[in-house]
Image (cartoon, rainbow, N blue to C red; front, side):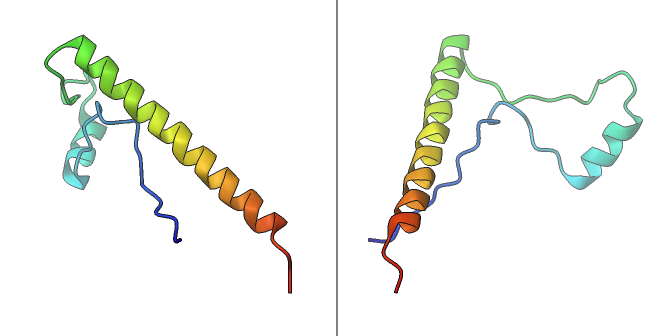
Length: 76
């Protein structure tokens, strides 16, 4: 069975600016261009953050287990 690697990111609350927005941030001395993605409540943001964090842990464990299995496999 082929392993499907999911890209899990724990930065969902941070906006991902475009290249042009990034250039504008260089000149933004006061930090007025900072944007963050939002959640309806802090509780929902915490739940989503915890789910994503544990998904990252699971992804890391799967990767480590697969790597270990490859190392232990008999070599021809």
